[in-house]
Image (cartoon, rainbow, N blue to C red; front, side):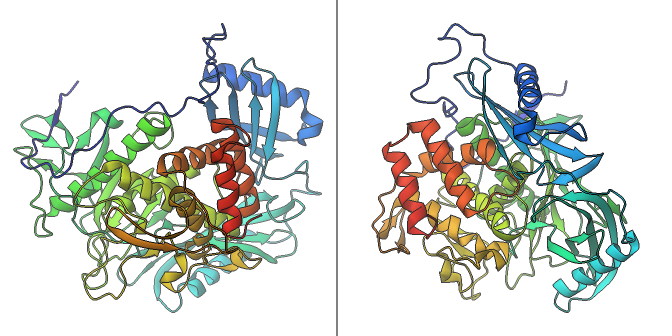
Length: 548
């Protein structure tokens, strides 16, 4: 086993809080041990959920034509269990087939949450539309979505699925189209097509990005865990699942979601004296320090606050690639490589995209993909983006780094001087960016997901800080409500705990804003009790953004 070492920091700019926080405990619940029961293991939870599904198959819409795989398991401190399944129909993946089974501490069935209410059956699994037609349509949709940006190559991969997200289940082609622009930077889009009629059902961006988010090198001097390999050190952290950071060397992927041209490298950064970077872009390792630090803080936040070990909850680390592409103004999480990728920006609009809240935002897409898997379209897509904004913000506050202090601004450190706005998004009043929604309306799901997210971002700010004008950590905010009410906040810690439990236990791929209200009220009940101040605050904050 190779030893791990801590980077000696000559000037630690902020003391990072890493003490363990017992956040998974339900405050009023007795633990399983106290009740004289052994704490259920993952295997016990799955076995119990399987038995419950068999016993309640009719009510849950489960038939012999379906298959199930376990996506995630949550076991509460009191022994209650929550098992999340993906389902297939006659071997085909089902969009909206996700099912969460809840078991009481003693193992008794306590209910379930489903993305779709039907039995998932379709009249036939034989398509009338050729896969080539679906592929051509997806490529055309990708080119149209790029709004004139020329793609020098594009490919598409159709997959036959059952779509239960958009009304009655129907056979569909889910086609992922990917392409590269003239600089080699990626574009990707998912198009859902009725496999019997050829009608387009839905389409959404496949790269879960921060919509042009970037990051400059503002983390100061930070501690890093590294690995000694021979006579040099690798930027690899054995204490956090072997998370590492590599140099993409200006190259880009030609491989997305299983459609491959080639994949950009991630050559692990090495250093002779274990002192990395200079804090300037002249040293390629400086951006790597920011990326690794962002990964560290995100890992620690989820582990110490929510008891989650790694993005997938399995203790395994992801990896980072910096210096990706040519003047690439974005950063993205790609679940197919389980990795974070950062561009250097164009130097005019954005600098290197390695800011702390950007790292927390993008890696939280990974958490969502391994839990609720909120569909990246419509209201669920807005909730997906908002979840990343919420947790990216909470990671920034958790880190307590004086060089990048906590705030409710998204990507505020990555915007170059003269760009004309202080941040990419504003949680206290999302409409300040000129595009995002402050309040829910029936058309909010038609917005780009980075702008429909404003409703949940506004809710989160109100729940944490309350309404009206105030200064928090040196930043002035003024958050109105959509119904003229006054909301009293309950703090960031309780916001994070409620949202995390709602995401991992109650939300499903089809959850919309009304469903998010229900899920977060259930989470508040679990954590603080029905009718508690926290429960009432959640209800008031949702009403304040028009979700009733």
